[in-house]
Image (cartoon, rainbow, N blue to C red; front, side, top):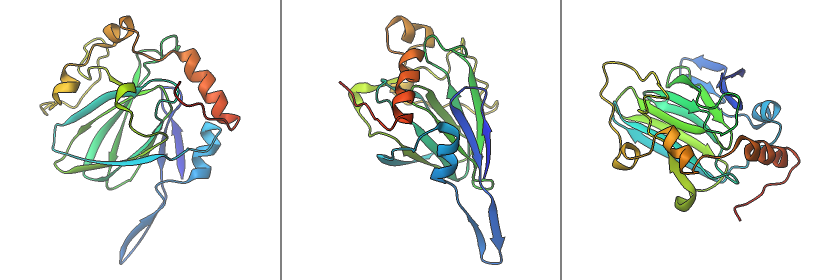
Length: 206
């Protein structure tokens, strides 16, 4: 499995080795040891999600309070998406920066993003089916969003596709407004939580 660190720290792209034959193809899209090697601890799997989206659908930018937030390991098993990771950690050297990876049902790449990072994607095909492994369960009271069309972020969504947002995502604040409202995690808290995970401790929400 090939691993590439994204320009947003604590986010990685994984490209599995494929084994095709006359029956089809086999691959290992998730390997716990490969992930542990780059992030320094095991992924605590608490929830697995599937979303199916029409072409143009944008989901995100989503994130959760730290701790425990929600690390994600994301792949696309049908169709194609543009997967985006955003550094929303206040005080991070790369605060406000983003990186993107095309995920599809040909290369079966995956993206890992650590706790405290923002996540979004756009479906580039109909019936785009995305699978997420999550380090913690969904907790509505701790979930937040940043508008994915925030011009200050300047995410380069594909041209020629009309973005389709949920009412909640469309009403989400800009990154600057989310910071003013105190919604964003701090880089310091994320680093401290990451150190706890590396030491084998998982802190839950107070």
